Length: 450
Image (cartoon, rainbow, N blue to C red; front, side, top):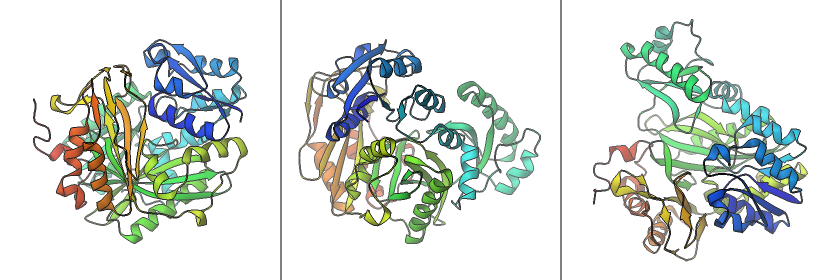
């Protein structure tokens, strides 16, 4: 691999370019017109503008991206996360164009992208799953009888959904049939696939996940993470390892995740996500993400493994550089996602120009940023500015370190979520691991309007 096209923007594009440079790989990043002079664009060796601001005309423009790779002598494409990272059609187009795709093959992306198929694959691999329908719900099936067997409350999930989308809750039998029909119509409209399935709902569940790596021959895990602090199903704070997890549960999810990767012949970095029921001490499969995750830095700092480097090695040589016996877990890490949103105004996006940006510097503190002073925060894309990662010997020290780093960070020109991150880290429920994936919605007046 000599020249890599990075098909993304923001902090992940900066992150990929950094590792590629360390490996002696030349980089080319695509950009929309307003991103042409962004930090990501200047972090790469070359930049190519592929279209105007709207993502469908630029970062989702498959043909323009592939043309940029071919016209500029690239031999590989790294999709990062979001955008086209889990698009099997794009992965096939990249390979068909004679380029190397940095990620699992299109078949694995399709299998795990269909949630009901992924659930079936997980069950066959011995991964614990929630009680639910076996595969997609047949329109002719007796949904009422099946739901009685699963038990209420339950959820109707779109097979092609993900990231918290395509989920509808059903509290009792009277809501079921109408909800299924609405879910099918919504799934067809939003995802282009009307199939849905049923699954038991776990109240106050925590969101835990396992990082896996595979090169088609060898398959390992790099431990677990907890991503339970979420707002509207979007992760806010992540940590590794997952705290307060029984040893038996931890071992089960790690080993079964590796088995799922092996069953898929997986090649690349992937994340197997679970719901953990802290009352019954059970974990159950949600989905597998076939890409690098936003929260991958917490795994990197506790293991010392550069996941992007492993992605590039697997794609270029067919082999990863680490084995399971090489992985050592040291300390605890917490990641805070800093977004350009106004927490005093219902988290309304806050585009604009960053006039002042002063990151806290200290031992064990890592900043993965996609902006700098003078950067323009666009209203067209995800509002995340950066990730603040703190690695310490213990969880308690990591929480204290993250708070210190947040209080020591200064950003002006746009509103950010730093105030709410401080409040969440300082909550007794977080330090005592009593939070869950719907916790933020239960907190009254988390941020008073100004």
